[in-house]
Amino acid sequence: MKKVREERFEFILYINGNIICQRYFNIFNFNTRSIRSLDMKELADYCVYMIEVDLREKAEDYLWGYHNPYVFQKPEEIQVKDVFENEDIFAFEIKIDKKSVAYKPFSGNFYPPKVRYTVDIRKSIPKIIREIQKTLSQKKYETKYLDQTL
Image (cartoon, rainbow, N blue to C red; front, side, top):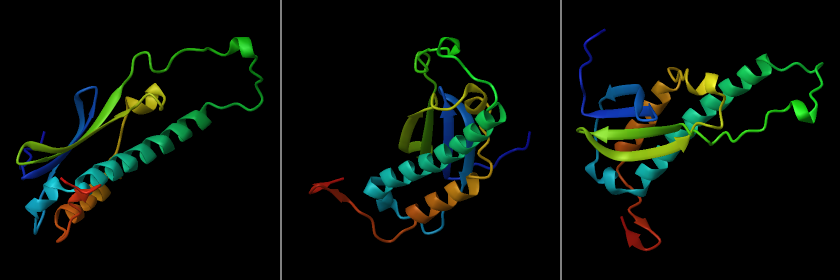
């Protein structure tokens, strides 16, 4: 394994508390006021959205690969079970100086087990880092929500 130089900023993607992906990066012109802003919540939501889109596309490819339109399935052949019986929880976290500043959990049970246990977000990593850098280096932030200061 390569020795990774730890930077001040990082994001981590977990499944059930286990790290799937962790990346360190730097941010030029970091604005400390960004940590307590509404933009942080929107940033975490958007990063999770990008990951969910990637998982959804892979789930569709996987399911279409096993679809056979020529086989008729009778209602009694369909297995009915609760997919949320053993829920797999993904979590996206942004850390600054080893302190968590954003944490967003989401369910992985919407995706087939083959997809959620072989997560590969390498194509999305540059976009995620770019969004984090852009958001945390802005000059102005939204610091009020419903007349409450964050």
